[in-house]
Length: 184
Image (cartoon, rainbow, N blue to C red):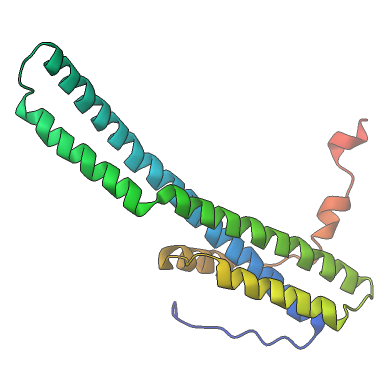
């Protein structure tokens, strides 16, 4: 069921921070995908606008230098250049890309905080209420200020995470001696 909504109900502080960690990973991935999409859209709209504007400008300049009337296709391209430039300004792909990239970076900060908290929980240190409140406030602030994610990005990330298996022993991947480091 693709429209199935799952509710996460943590029973422990560890489960709470794990849920927040997963949520932050998903949000970071969504905003990263959106930022990349808008950066690509800026390129695919901006380059044709630049090329058409340059072609029109040089053609008009050449026609004026030779005192000839520019051909009709120059007028058509001029309108096209204006439309492409207006679209580029209206859509503000660069600004949208930056907003999503900034949101992704802020979620990465949250991820590091939650990872650190989970390590401390694993070592027996329970977070105090102020730390939990600060983490919740940080997530709430991110949700309030982050730009809206298009459904296609949201759904793609949900699909990617739906079948993901979480490795509780992942820390061992980083602490095992690397064959590259053994030779040093």
